[in-house]
Length: 214
Image (cartoon, rainbow, N blue to C red; front, side, top):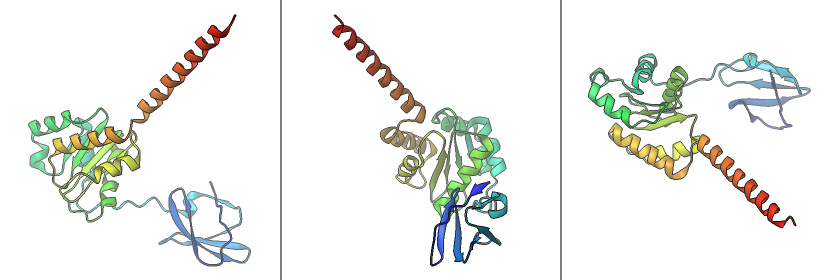
């Protein structure tokens, strides 16, 4: 169930609920809420409705010709996947690229033209969902995009925007991780650093208090 918090409006507006954008317009005592491309649904102020009644499943724009299941299967073997049969069967190439990956990460090289970077990110998201990897990097002829449970979206988008199209996968991974290391800590490392600092402060305070005791 989700609580709809729709504010007063005199014209058509937009609200965001669970990252899904819906349109709404005022109608006397009720408000008509409609998902773009879906059916209308009338709800009262403060009414709780089932997400299933209001939203369709999240739409991901994976380009045609991308075999997510095949790529996911390759990623589960060694973290490396290619849409090209010749490259996917090149054991030496796959081993070399795999050495550049960090534990729990994967990279997929997709020889499908995707005009929009968000579509490439959708491929990465589908592959992460299918494999459970921490970070999935997808390289297409025009874009590099990734999703991660380890690094923030802002950090990975900043780094991947600096990677030129067509770079070799070993160089891609090197640039990707180097860029992330320069601008962010992994979440686990950040939490550990905070814990260490807290312990140091506590010990220092305790010792200082002990020295002041007669």
